[in-house]
Length: 425
Image (cartoon, rainbow, N blue to C red; front, side):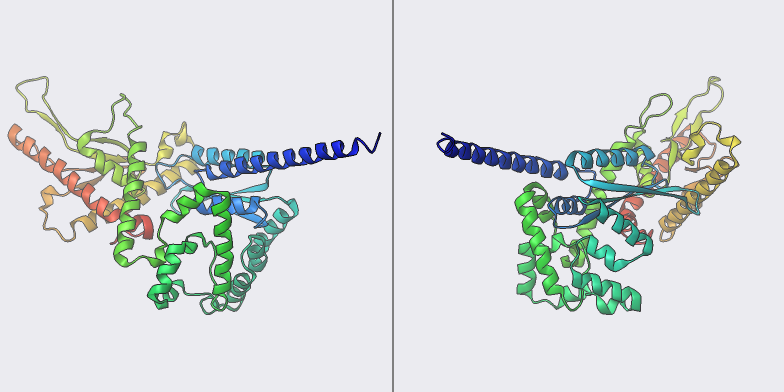
C-alpha cells in the first residue's frame, strides 16, 4: 500500500517544487521592477543594484549629496530620498549600511553626504567599509565587482603615481578606432553600461565583462535597459554633438528649476512677476539664492500734485539662514549668513562684469548691486532717476529690458556652468 502511493506523493512534491520556483521567479521579477522604478537614483546606481541583487556584484555603493549652496534643494529632499532607499532595500531583502558625513564649507554652506553599501552578505559590507577607511583601492574595486585586471591596474597606478600610464585614455582610444569599430560599438551599446575605468593592457577582456552585465540587464530589467541604451556615450560625441547634448540637458534642468520656482509665492500669495521671472530663475540656477523680486512699477502718490512714485526692477539676494528663528542670537549662524551673502555677491558681480565686458552700455543703463543690510544681503536693481512721468515710464521699460537681456546672457552661459562649473564659455 505504501509503495502504491509513492508515485502520487512524488508527483505532488514535484508540483510543489514547480510552484515554489514559479513564485520565486515572480518575486524576483517584481523586485527587479521595484529597483527599475527607483527614479531618484541614477541609471548606473539602479544597474549596479540589480547586478548586486543577482549576485553578479558582491556590493554596490550609492552616494547621495546635499549642498546648501544649491538654493532650490531642501535638506528634507535628500532625507526623503535616503528614507525611501532604506525602505526599498528592506523590501528587497538586501543588507545595507548607511553612513553620514557633514561639514560647513569655507563659504558657510552646509554639506551632507550619505553613503550606502548594499549587498546580500553583511561580511562583504563590513569589508567594504573597512576598505574605504583604509583607502584600499584594490579591495574596494574587487568588492564592487570590477574586473580584477582593471582593479589591479588602478591600484598600482595610484600607488606608483603613474595612473595615466596604467589606465586607458578613453578619448584617445576612441579616436584611434576605425570607423567600423566605432559603428559596431555604438550599435551594440556596450559602452553605455561601463561603470569603471579600463586598464591599458586588458581593456578587451574588461569590455567582455561589461557585455555580460549588459545582457543580464537586457534580460532581467528591460525597462532600465531601454533607458540606458537611449544615450550616446559622451566620448563618442563630436564637439558639436556634445554642445547640443549639454544645451538639451541644461534646458531640462532649467525647466525643473522653473517648476520649483513657480511653487514659491510672495508673503501676499502672489507668484513671480512675468518681467522679472526669467532673471530670478537663472540666478537661482547659478546658485545665487533670491528671496524677493519686483518687475518694477509706476505708482501714483495720494497727493495728486506730487509726481509718481517709481519702483525700479529689483531682485533681493539673501542667505536662507536669515529665515530661521532667532538667528540673530546665534553667532555661528550670523557668521555663516555673512559668508554666504559674500559668496552670492562675488558671483553676481562676476556675472555682471562678464555681461558688460563686450558691451558699450551707458553707465546709467547698467544694472547695479546695492547692499541692503549689515550682513551683506543685496539687491540687483535697475537705475531710475526722478524726472517727468513720461521719462520715468521710459526708464522703467529700459530697466526691464536690461533685466531681460541679463537673463538671456545667463541662459547662454548656463550649460558651461552646469557641466564645467565655469562662468566662462
